[in-house]
Length: 286
Image 1 (cartoon, rainbow, N blue to C red):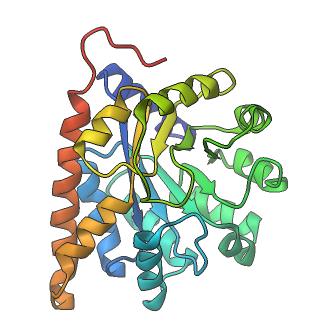
Image 2: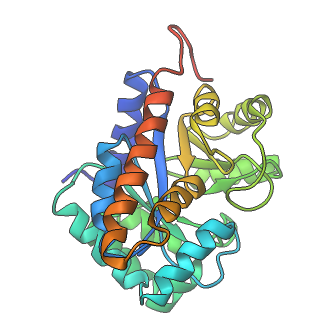
């Protein structure tokens, strides 16, 4: 099995070689059903996902919009917590040892488990990166050393409001990639201004020598295509989850998993095809 940070680097290298942005879908673990998660992850890889962001359900997801909040609440109501998410990753790894998995969530569940125990278990099941919204670079402390010890990439958010000092701080300690939040606010909100994103990314790349993924507000093939011209990766979550939720609406529980998997993978495949042809010959992301 490849080392964790190597899997992330390999995914971005493969996308760059194919002259396209990487595709990073976000799903909420345990939604619509706990049994859905692993088959859905495998289906999304077949549909074109290069990296998977797996959301850990948490009761107070301050950076998430209503779609992801509802998905997290649904998972929590079914008893899904951090330990279950780690078990899901372990199950996924019995089939797929190559696709990078980034666990995205909040500090509270990690603190409850204990940072050391969490990082040991995360490394053991094959998690490649951790994006913890409320562990900014100034507050990550000893957790950073534990992640580095276990070769797990610390991934950070940057936003339009990020200062030059914050960008520099992230550039010094981030690994894997950096996630640029293209809008002020929560996930799933607003309209994208691609030219503004391009300008912001140039400022980030002065201090961050890593791929930069862009997320928040990407909702269709057109917006994904436009962002893929300027970003190293397209990160997409709320619309994917909304698509699966609508596909399950009114269905009996025993049919929901397959409906979500079919709808989600089909929709993501459309995004994958759109960004695969977005860059003209000779186009360089810089």
